[in-house]
Amino acid sequence: MVQDILNGSLNYAPALITLVILGIYHYRQKKVEHGLILIAAGVFLLSLTFRTMDSQSCSYLPIGTHFLWHILNAVLLYLTARAYVVNMPSLRAVSSVD
Image 1: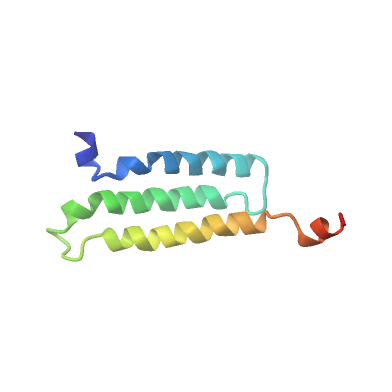
Image 2 (image 1 turned 90 degrees about the vertical axis):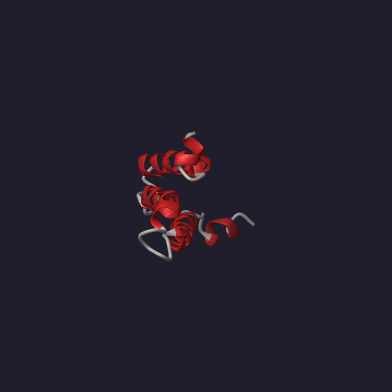
C-alpha cells in the first residue's frame, strides 16, 4: 500500500500543494519577498522526505530522522509567518481611513 511506503506522509500532500499554489501566486503578484513561500514549500518537501525516511533510517541512524521533520517544520512556520507579516497592509494606511 502506498500509505505504508510513504510512512503516512501522503496525508500532507494537500498542504504541500497549497504552499506551491500560494507560492506561485505570491511570485506572480510580485509580493514583498515573493519567493519566500516557494522556499517554504521546498523546506516542507524536505521535511516530508525526512519524515518518510524515518522508520527505515532507524536501523542505520539510531536517533532516526524524525527530529529533522520537527526542526524543518519550525523553519517552515517562520518562513510562512514572515511572508504574511511582510505583506500585511501598513498600519498607517489602516489608521488614515479614520
